[in-house]
Image (cartoon, rainbow, N blue to C red):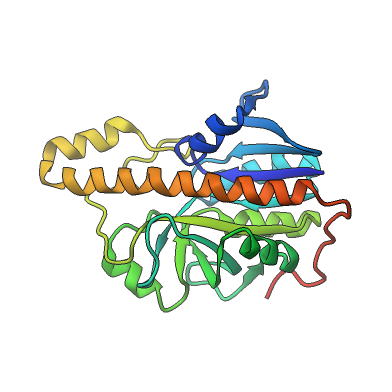
Length: 250
């Protein structure tokens, strides 16, 4: 079995990479592989946002994976979710758009069996959603927000690959990000350290909140690695291939 897992950035992947000794493959795009029993797991770092996710997805699905997991960190849009909670979404839609792509039913059920908490909907935003006020407003549409899962699952559906969206919560709904991470994004879809540092120097009062976000994000990434170990191990033991659902979009 070939399992494709996507993350936006290296920091989300780092705990799992160290644990499983993923080896980087040759090439310009950040792609890594490791064996889980009979399964070959390929990880692709897409970069943040829709544009980067689409380019990465078109490249990744030429690999013809048997299943795909859109993974990484997300912000909570409602109370009751804490940093480190693993959420698996039944539906994923872009912010403000009515069309949703569904996670594969069997993969969603397996994710829940492996410790994820099923939610009804996850929202993919084209920009970083950092203010608590904005998160609460989006909470009328979805339970969590991230930036790539809709694009990844839509491309998976187009290619006939069963897929599921699973994210670890890094920030709660009432948490205000202290700096504008949207301004710090680079051309590759990552975060420029200098872009954040410049804001820190101008407004050092935000440093405690930044340290909390960093702590909670590392914790969430470790919890996500625990989940992915269980999920990939479960799928690696399967003898029957997962079939694509007949309905992928709503």
